[in-house]
Structures are given as structure tokens and as C-alpha cells.
Figure 1 (cartoon, rainbow, N blue to C red):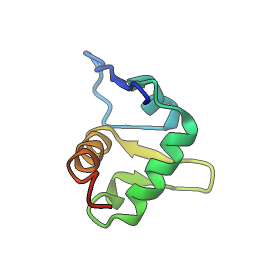
Figure 2 (spheres, rainbow, N blue to C red):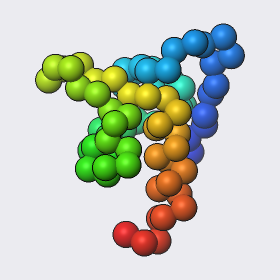
Figure 3 (cartoon, helix red, strand yellow):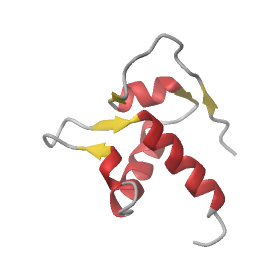
Figure 4 (tube, one colour):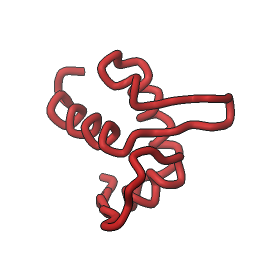
Length: 80
């Protein structure tokens, strides 16, 4: 089982970040796992607004929205 540790950044005013920022904030989260989570977020209408793709190479993820999505997945893990 993957151990993911949330690392809050104390003086961070940023609300959005790229994949590298998400992987830094959530220690243990691998880029491939993040990619599959982002695909699932984009498909869910409730969380799709938290992932923005201004171009095919750039992706911005809302930190709190991503954390809320992980909590949603935790609460609904047996419903899939």
C-alpha cells in the first residue's frame, strides 16, 4: 500500500500549482498515480473545475480542490 504524507507549506499563498508542486506537497505520490487521479477528477463534474489545462503541456491543479477530491475518494472507495 502506498504511503502518502501531506506536507503543508506554512507561508504558501498559492492556491494553484503544477504536477511537481502537488507531488512535493503530497510526499509519496508518484507522477503516474497523479495522472490517473487527474483523469478521474476531470471526469467528475464536481471536481473538474479544480483542474485547468491552458495548453496540452500545462496543467494547473487547485490544492484544496485536490485534497477534497482525495477525501471524496476515501469516503466513496467501496462504491466503485
